[in-house]
Amino acid sequence: MTTTSTAGPTSTADGAPAPRPIRYFGTTWVHRGTGYWLRRAAVSLGALAATAAGALALRLGVSGVRLSEAAPLALLLMLAIGVCSALAGLRNWKILTEGKDSLTGWAAEEKSLAGVWLIGFVGALAVYFARSLVEAPGEGLQRAVHDQETATWHRRRAARAEREARKAARRRA
Image 1 (cartoon, rainbow, N blue to C red):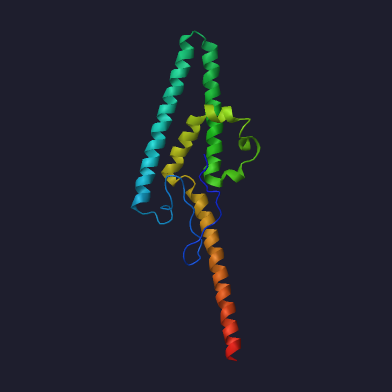
Image 2 (cartoon, rainbow, N blue to C red):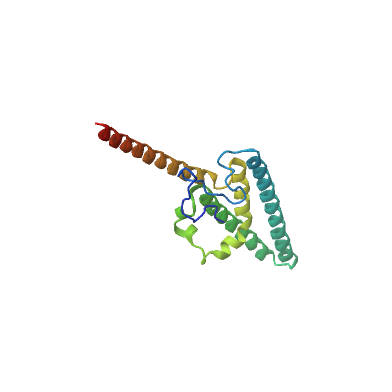
């Protein structure tokens, strides 16, 4: 689940870089208005509900295996679900805090570990819920990128204004 946009930087009417939208939040994360806080609450509750529903579904699955009187298999299944959830949660935390480009090693595998990410969806949802309590998931990463782009734009604008002032002073002299 990625929260970053792959589109190139856009700009506002005055040429300043525009913030990139975050899933479920749009660009409300920039100024953190009323809509932002309502969306944060809704996303947190939705992620918590999805985590609970997923955990219930997995519990029902494990209960079905346990009813088949395959106790060692049920134990292995619970262990596998726990490990997969932990791995998916770690991967999702790294994506939400550092971006998908920062993934290396086993976490960067998309297709070969798709089963692990699928089985560990409860861990990924739990991390999404936990992150949504702190900020909009992916907001810190987007804010850092936006702040860097804005600072670069201000530096270039100031340098351009300085060059124009020097040219005007030379013309007057």
